[in-house]
Image (cartoon, rainbow, N blue to C red):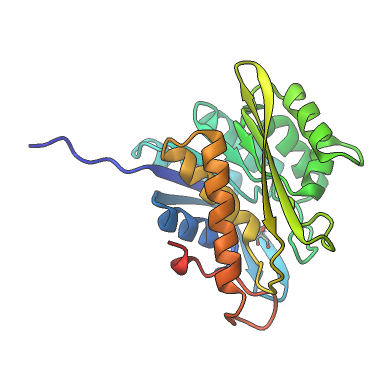
Amino acid sequence: MNEPTSVPTVLTIAGSDPSGGAGIQADLKAFVTTGAYGAAVITALTAQNTIEVTGTMPVPAEFVRQQLGSVLSDIRIDVIKLGMLTSRKICEAIAPLIENHTVVCDPVMISTTGFQLIDEDTADALINAILPLADYITPNRFELEKLYGDRIDDAKHAGIELMERFPNLTGIVVKGGHVNITQSTVTDVLLYRQKGLIKEAIENRPRYDSPNTHGTGCTFASAFASYLAQKNSPKAAFKKAVDYTNHLIKISAEIRIGQGRGPLIHHKGI
Ligand code: PXL
């Protein structure tokens, strides 16, 4: 028999969005449409739609660990993508199981609708138990500020400081969608380590004004994880993930799903 063909595999550890726009639902759609096999460990149920998040119900940490153990004991996972981690106990339960993997951590803290998705104690555990074993993080400007621990004027400076504080990090993507929303250009920045030096890659795109941006952060981080799993360099994976997400924002602008901030339409992403 021939050697079996292998496909790139990505596992998301994240919360469920039953409206299908964010969380594991977005992650799986992004994995599949960018060319990877997707697996999913669920950390929490949320009750939400395109208008608002009305509640979250964390999965007990021991059961998150059990889901993760089941997957990792069976399937070769190339990259693990972390989304919403809803308790200190969950952060501490998954840490020992993920530390030998390539980890892309989307430090999900506050939803785009302003709903605080995790509490202060969990944010502390994310910083102290998860960040030291992440390879990449994909904060938006607010999350970067929270991780940095202070108000920031210069995102690049804060990112470099974080890379120095966490020598385990290979890269930080600072997403620009939330910054300077009156400007006509969106700038995403990748800081990455190469031969001991911290380098910078910049992607500028015209700002596209769409009402449908629910789950954009989850989608971007998942696409980035998927492209890394497909053996792209950090810089190439970053560019492809920016292109992919931008394309989805454009094609989803005119499509109406729900009555609020609509989701991205991933199946037209290829
Ligand atoms: O986009 C952040 C996010 C991640 N995961 C889940 C969410 C949200 C935002 O609403 O609900 C499950």
